[in-house]
Image (cartoon, rainbow, N blue to C red; front, top):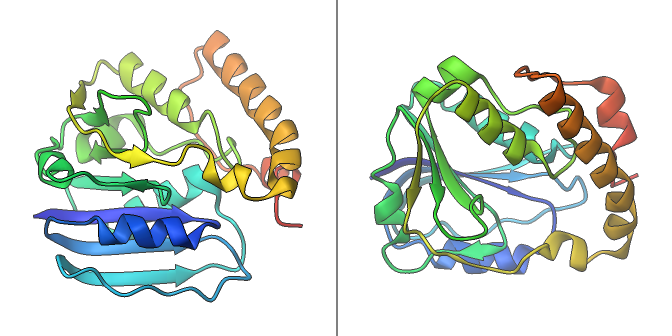
Length: 216
């Protein structure tokens, strides 16, 4: 059994439904973090899932913030498992993910590596959480992987090959595409600055949060 599956969503609830329907392995807790304040969505709990919680938020936490929120809500679990709303699991993917170690960052060996992944408690203990200054999306995964490597912790790559609709959040909303043109550049610059300065920290910034808003 997988202890938890944490899934942020901002739009394309039709793709989220497809992902939920692809779940074929027992999951104790499924957490949907709905970052769209205008959403009133709710889907049926998949049969293999023990408990499903759908959190409607008043504003967008962003990708890093959503992942961190999931870790904080299940603080006693040894591993946290994540999925994007626009991917779907192929038969056996979740069973393979259930083998993720509490001592490692577990990624797919197939591109895109971060559409579903797992983080062990030893990684969070040593490396910390995702840097929420990368808002609302992009480069938070690259930064975290860089920090895990610097800490000398293992990165396991499993033969998990989920299907996905790449960049579906952006492609379905022209406003998001326009906003992302600015926020992506800002995030890349922050990543380069952190890498050059050997900065292994993480934080939340009110300035970054306000400057990166897509929904206003």
